[in-house]
Image (cartoon, rainbow, N blue to C red):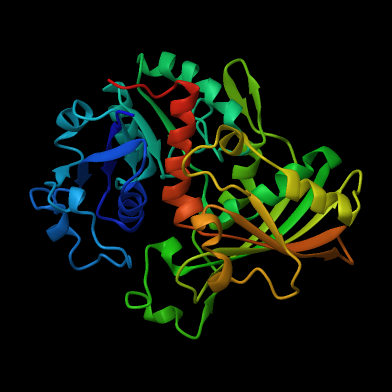
Length: 362
C-alpha cells in the first residue's frame, strides 16, 4: 500500500511528540512534514525536541532529520506537500486556533485536530470513532461553508470524557437520566512531567481550568442528532462533573454514578460492555483495540499504572460495577489520556475517515 503523507502541526509539544511515536512504522501513514512555532522552525526535529523528548522510545530516524517548518508562515508549503495533517498546535486563543485550522482546510488539506476550538462547531465532527462515526456526514456541510472540495476539520473530544463516555454509550437505550462523574487526571493532560510540575508531588489539585464544563457538555454533542446537515446536541443525560489533577504520569480515571429510566440488571450491563464493537473493530483498523471495553472482576482494578496501556493504550478499562445508594449504579473506568484521549484517538479517526472516503490522496 502506498502510504499517505502526513504533517504533524505542533510536532514539538507533548501531544505532537506522541503523534510522532504512534505514526512510526504505521502501515498506512508516514510523517513527511513536521511543523511548530517560529521558535523551533529551521532546526532539525531531533534538535528541536532534544531537551523535552520524554518517551522511552527513541526519536524515529525517519523524522529526526526533518527540518521543522513554521506552522503559520509555511502553511502553503506544508499544505501542498502532504495528504492530510494532524494538528496539536494551539494559537493564542480559540478564535485564532479556529482560523488557523480553517486556513489549512481552505488550502484543501484535511485536518485531524486535537484542539478544543472547533469542538462545539455544529458542522465539525467531534469523534470517538467507536461511537459516532455517522457524524462524519457533516463534513459535506462544512466543506460548503468553507468553499472547499477536499479540505475539512474534524476534532477529538476532551481527554477527560474518553474514560467514561465509552462505558456509558452501550447503555444509552436504557434511558440514561443522570450521571455524576469525578475524574482523576494525570499530569500529562496538562503537558507536564514530574520534573516540570513539582507542585503535584504528594498532592491532589481540585481544579483544572475548563475541564468540568467540557466534561458536562461534550458528551451531549457526541450523542447528538444530525439535523439539516449539522449536529444538534442531545438534551440529556444531565451530567455533573468534578475534575482533579493527581500525581500520575499518564492515564485518566473516572468514578461514575448513573441513573436510568429503565434500569438494567448488572449481568446485562456486563454483557453490553463485553459485546460492544464500533466501526473501527468491524473494519479492523490498524490502531483499533480488539476489545474496546474490558471489564475487570478484581475489586482493586482498573489501576492507572497497571491498566492504562491496555490494548496499546487504546482500550477502555472498567471495574467495580455495583449498586449505588443514591443513583442506580456506580463504577470506575480508565483510559490513557495521551493515546486514546489524544494522539492515538486522532490516528484512529484518520484511519476511519480514510476507510469512509473522506480522506484521499492528493
